[in-house]
Image (cartoon, one colour):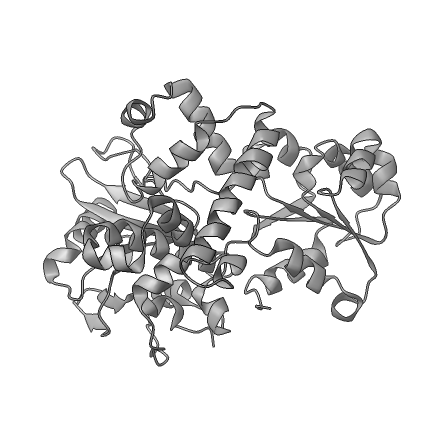
Length: 415
């Protein structure tokens, strides 16, 4: 079992907040984490664990939410809470009567921030954390600190590299169950079953409709376009799905954490910048499965590796953002003349770090052109610019510009 790097943040939230929600895609390890965290040995408090995947528990929670909540113990752990929206007002009423911290630990496979009726009912009473698939640092047993390092302006020495094929790492992704299976047919079988179950169960439940027959095709098409700009008109033509329906489907895929669009950055809405988000999925392994990529196929046709590597890097940064001391928001940057930065991190003070991803073994000064444009447009707010590449050396290009091996993502370790 892997130790999750967000565990200290989850423990801290339970110490001062009445309701804590741990959400994220299915099969990322939420139930395992909360079960471990709330055992008597770990917390000193007996916890009542209920999963709403159980039909009997779901019926009780739906038919009598207040009675269901009243029957739970000192610390109530409710798994897949989004299945019973009526529980949120009942939890609010219970918390308003007793504001002790750590009373409710909820997990959910739907993003309640995209379901305002649920999130607003517990405003000021609930902290929300997201559990992503396993990071490379979690797989290696340590807590990465790349974000803090680059914003601090100091890059500590890298830990020694562990020999591994980058394509294999990217294609494997971070789902614990998928990683436990051998690459190839067995892992593909898991991904296929995962997508089918999620679309037929969670997406259908959120939409409250049957017959989402176009969703698998849409998800596959998105996987083939990761790293590209989201063009609704073009995507509608490619899928023959009307734009109004397409927007609804994308919202459902985002609400279940499969689709992770990256918004555009702009300091000035009057600037002539591309405002469309970029297409990314939650996991590079899932994207590779949907697009039919293998390590051998990417070796034969490396043109497809660039977008997949970009999704992998952005996914790893998104995971680290959950526990980094430096709180950041994630964007991309692109001008109408084609200059772009794959990922822009912005902290609370408005400082920026730009990240480019190159599926190449060498880097030159021209690979920093997008970062130079971002530095000019941001008025000096760019603290550092990084170009990740498939080589092995850390190379300084001056002006806080660095070329880093992709493995640096998990080789800067929190002291």
